[in-house]
Length: 637
Image (cartoon, rainbow, N blue to C red; front, side, top):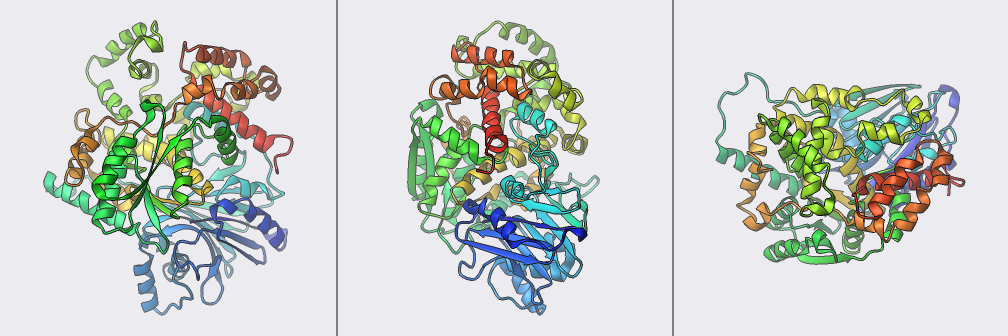
């Protein structure tokens, strides 16, 4: 795993600067502490920070082909590179390393832009074609690895694995993108192609960008496709589908065991991580190291479940119980993020990564199973919402729950009921998002200043702008459940979950691999009818039935806990002073983005325990920490 950065000057820009490239590289040392490589050639500058995983001794980057006409700066892993390399050797290509990076260069030389179809993996890279003076930026199919870029007014392109590398370039301005801010406060993440900075963009997953002297073209090279209409009419038996799924899961894990350094696995004790650990044992991984994190608050502690799986498969198991170091962690992680992210689970992800990094450089993670096989409660809610008479009943229930307070019902039930009833206040096309929307249109109307609303041109609907307009259009090509999975795969998964995992694991210089996001496995899952993924109200049904041959039923069918923290308590105690400081009237009024009255009202109600505004307050806090870090008096520090 690595970090990349660089730029290519347009025709009038002159030669690139190795000194500038080195300063860009220094911002992403944490992504690659083992090695640094710089290549400057005419207008092009390619930089790499390397975390050595494959060909530890010989894989120094950037790398070129035989005659030096193609250069690559690469981040990621192509798990099947060895078989592609063998084919290229048979075709006469000469290699100087055993790395997947060099295999990419020769594959492009051999097959042109279609070379990506031959690889399975996670990657983001820059490929400089010196003969044609073209730069290509590529991001993997699912968007596991990040890649940002900007096109300057003179046509120069600047790129990097993280925003902080791009910001070093003197031609890049730091201005907030209002639409990105609006999306962040609504969803707690910023979906591609937006970034928090005006004029800087995320390359969407599964896309290749071609830069040619100041002009860019972005082409999608992969997407999930619906089952072909009028195709094979013979339906496989359930047993056959389970066999195929098990084989794909096992193959995906096997590919991700390729490493020249020690590896392990995150283990929560849930279905996804337990399946991966079980398959690692079945495949003979040795030693098999697993890592779990828990909390003193038993409501957030899954260590007992993880311990059972570790004992079942004989792993070398490590546990960490999180102490309430909330203030220290919030400052550290808030400043480590390139742009605001409201996902609470950055904390346990970072801590379990630092624990694992003491022993290994690579871990396998269970991320992606919920978005591929329908594991979230909002899939159940959508199923219920379509039942006859539910909408009318929900409106009546909404009148009742409006009079309740969180303490009036069992923990969690009140919030779930209220969120479900509030979904019917939204248009049908965005109702799926109610479970992941934390500011309604009315909330935004109250919170935003007139200046911010003017900058936004009003309060836009999610469905009316990228990336949601295209995603909503394509959802109708699938059955309802699978269409909702497509929506989450293209938005929430890539721009929240993968951002969290990448930034927090890379902050610890640890490579995380996600077997459940192998594109072959995803394509299989999306060919299945929705009823096999969500059976009645049973989530991940076919995955669970398939896992019965590997795991105890107690771990498969137990209630889903999630990977989160007691943030609502932290905001009332450990983080209260920080919240009061960052969300003070003086600071908020001086920025001109938000009205302080609704923020004050949320803080008072939350601290007194009358309401749970943890999502809204945490998002505002993370934005203010980010703003001070990147737009404050000394942002370059």
